[in-house]
Length: 424
Image (cartoon, rainbow, N blue to C red; front, top):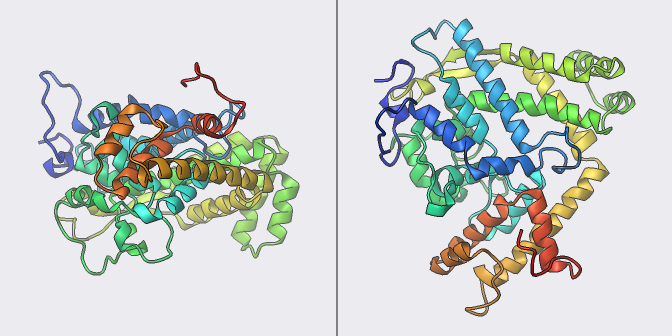
């Protein structure tokens, strides 16, 4: 039995048995974390968009630096809860290595060009089972992380549950709803995560079911909210999209409560004083201390302590995070500059996908040009359906960094780009 009474064999179990190495000095959660950190999927996050295209300036955040910041916040929440909660003690605590693993891996499935890329692939893959960043993260962890063996990392049940923000299958999602689902063929891993137990009738597919999360997933989710509601805001300020006059004009057009007005003034003062990083970093600490555990009962509570608690967030901190996200959305993400880049991202991914669909997914001829790596072509030829072929094509596109997507597009469509020596 593990030394930490918060966890049992149920939490450490993997779908397939892991080999035991003599003298192993790590527990199962530490092995999960190490496998993520040493994966190519994790390294690719250094060149994937967070707010601005990666590489535009050295100091803007990428998916990688964002994930590291989320992991730090997640570990700190674990430390805060261990110190403050009456339900935890030195022998019974939320494992910070497990939470770190969930935080480090939560964006592995995101495609190039940020949420714009995710929306485009969701639309293009709709006839073939959809595309969703969280579902793609699960696919990477369970099926493709170690591509040379076409296998995943065989994660623990607790890590799968810590990563799965959504638990509705593509076939179950309400019509015309946002892309918050798992792929249909991932039911095997969802079933394992739940220990083979069926959802009760009150957890209907969609928003209600997607709200059912382990305590580690709740911590990861709030750490993610904290990071992008503060750090994305800081990047927007440094890039010049957000300044005092723009925020004041924005606030004048909103129906803000007094509490919101106070938070807006705090932000404006930080900008006037030239203390944006310091003031916003201080708010990270407030978001960490805004958490507490509240007991909860549900259909998995008897199987694991991970489902015996809800992470309660101070409403004032939640409100401020929502305010910051709204400012970032309106002044940064909906700005003409970023909307133009979103349009370009959509154009690039659609043109690449259309070419690959014609060549590989629904080919009019059995053979054609070799447009994809030989190993992936072999898998496509072995696939039995258009949906399987589309998923493999989508995997290749989703794995691309921003720069690799640009280069691939130019090789396919730019007559002045590329040569016989250009293999990168």
